[in-house]
Figure 1 (tube, rainbow, N blue to C red):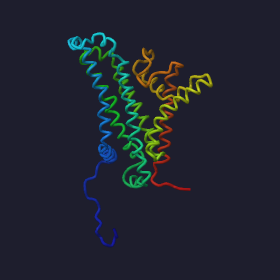
Figure 2: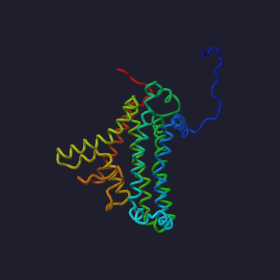
Figure 3: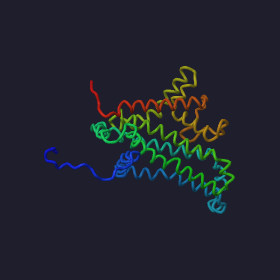
Figure 4: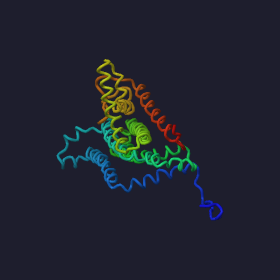
Length: 300
């Protein structure tokens, strides 16, 4: 409005603390996602596996229920150990990939397409707070799918089995928490980076599956041609699976990872190289975001 009309009045309401301001970004993003009926149905369906896992744990400790369903032998085939929880985390993490591919491309690309990023950064938001606010949407939704129900299942098993079991298998709880966060951080950075560079949402979602599956095939081709094992570093499921096995079982693993994240039997790569490869991928995603998340775009 024109200044001479003198009708402009500054905002005189209460101001939020600086560390709380970026929460406005995920709040409105979650409200938009809540309007999608398909997303709501899919997200509710992702809790079917934790429910089944809880039933399995209950059946393992209820002999009367096992006899009622004539499932004594079946229960013996499903031990509640590190492999059980690793398979749970693997299945939920694969569902998280579908979730991130569906909602991730729509987090940043609309702001860039509509030149709205300058409006965000003109307010008391830094670029880091903008990225943190967008990423927190994925962090919250995926956490509720992975490590939160995983730790609840671990606590349920410890309650039924006894405190000695929980103390002896405390490494499983740490593996659930840190293993899930490894996947969450990498997946959210990849989703935001592709959303910033690929403005067409279906293409950005397809690229996420391409990084997950196509890169694994490319790494396998390198191993065959060069007669080496280092191509496995391009195999994201193998890299994540190697880190999970180390987190859950230590230096002497008794399993080959969780479902969808099993170790490749063609070669074993050191754990430190997997950490380095994952850190490199995260830094590459941060670099891609830094190039795009700017208050003004310079066109040459």
